[in-house]
Amino acid sequence: MNRPAGRVLVVDDHADMAESLAEVLESLGHSARYTTDPRAVLGMATRHRPHVVFLDISMPHLDGFSLAGVLKRAFPAIRVVAVSGQTREQHGSRNGAAAFDAYLAKPVDASMLQAVLNESLK
Image 1: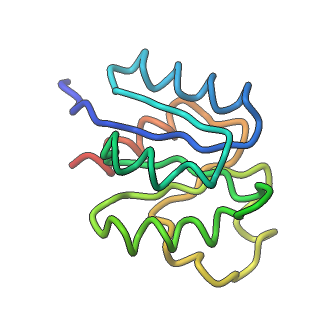
Image 2 (image 1 turned 90 degrees about the vertical axis):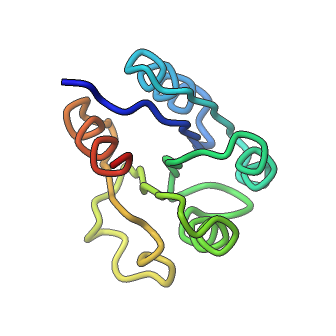
């Protein structure tokens, strides 16, 4: 089965997590970039034009809920996927939760990652 390749951005304040997820995405045939600084995301998104952003929720300076809203306003077609060590229920109904198109729990399961990518890149 041919899977569409996409441009993907990973944002996580833990460098090992960001880099390893970007490497997995590259191994799946996608063009992946990553950053550990949520303040750099808008500039990177402008340059890289990702189809999908995998976004950690708990980060310093700018949390994932706030950043998801900013991304959606700046790039309405972008798909934003929450990636968190907590369940969706543990986060509760925070403002900005609606900006997420999907939710993945850490550690990210490869089959769930691929399912989200397949849906996001239709």
